[in-house]
Image (tube, rainbow, N blue to C red):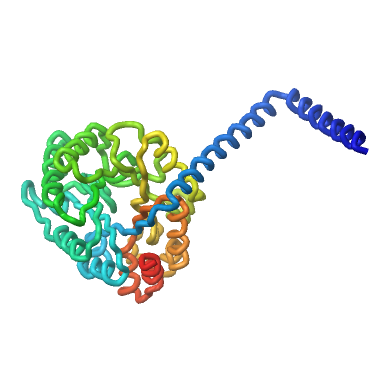
Amino acid sequence: MARRFINNLYQLLRLIWQKFCRYWRKNVWHKIIFCLIILIGLILGTMYGIARWYIASEANKPLTLGVTFIPDYAESLGLNPQQTMAALINDLQVKNFRLTSYWSDNEPSPGVYNFNQLDSEFQMAEAAHAKIILVLGLRQPRWPECHLPTWADNESVNQWQPQLESYIATVVNRYKNSPSLVSYQLENEYFLKGFGDCTNFSRSRLISEYNLVKKLDPNHQIIVSRSNNGIGFPIGQPTPDEFSITVYKRVWDTHTHRYFEYPIPAWYYAFLAGVQKIFLGKDMIIDELQAEPWPPHGETIPEASLTEQNKSMNATILKSRIAYGKATGMRTIYLWGAEYWYYRMTVLHDPSVWNVAKQAFQN
C-alpha cells in the first residue's frame, strides 16, 4: 500500500515536472513572465518582512499624538487663532504641536519683525506644558508652500537667500530656550516639485540652512520631511537627526475630476521607516496625517458644502485614518486639519469630527 502511494506520488510529480518543462521551453515570453512573477514576489515579501520587523521593534514605545497648528489657516476659516489653539489645549487636551514660522508673516519688511502671533502660541504651549516642533525655512506647510515675503518677490536667490538665513537665525535665537521646544523641522517636503508655488530646490541651500541651525542650536534635533508622493530614498546631505513623512489618503484628482483614494497599505510606510532605520539608523515620524477634507476643483473648505466635505473627511473616516496611522508602526503622529475640526464644530455646528479627535487624544 505504501509502495503504491509512493509510486503514484512519484508519477504525479514527474507529470508536473514534464508539464513545467514543456511550458518553460514553449517561448521566451513565458520565461520572462515567470521570472518577473518570482522577482515581484520576492521584492514584496522582503518589503513586508521589513515592515513587520519595524512594527514589532516600535510596538512597546508610547504613542505620541499631536497636531499641526497654523494661525493663518484658522483665520481663513473665520476663526480666532488664539481661541482655536486654546480649545485644542483645554478641550481636546493636545500636548504636542507642530508650529509654523512663515517668513512672509514675521518679517513684513526687511529687518522689521513681528512675532506677536508666534510668541502667543509659544506662551500658550508653555503654560500647558505642551511640546513644540517648530518649522523653519522658506517652504512650510499650507499653500503656497513657499512663503516668500512680497518685498523679496523680485529678488534673485543670491539676494534673498542671505536674508532668509538671517531670518532663520532670528527665529532660532528667539525660541531655542523655550522649555516647550523639542525639535525643528527644516523646510517642508523640500524636494517635492509637483505641489506648491516653489521654484528653488537647491540642495546646497538646504545644507547651508541645516548647518546654520545646528551651529546656532546644537541642543535640539532637526527633522527633514519626505513626501508620501515622492519616490526615492534620502541618501544625500544633509542627514538630519530624524525624518518625517506626510500621509494623504483621499484627494481630489484634477486629471480625472474625481476623488482618488491611494491604495497604499499601512505596512508600506512601515517598510519605508524600517529600511531607513536599517541603512541610515534614523527614525521617522508622521508629521502630516490627513484629517481634513480635500475639496474638489480647487475650492476652499468654506466654499464646499458639508455634504461635499464628508466625501473626503467625516467622523468615520477620521477614526479609520487615525487607526491607519497607528498601523504604520510609527509612534509619533501629527494630525493635519485641527483648525478644520474646530471650524466644523463652531461654524457648521457639527461636533462629530471634533468628538472623534477628542476621544483619540484623551485615550
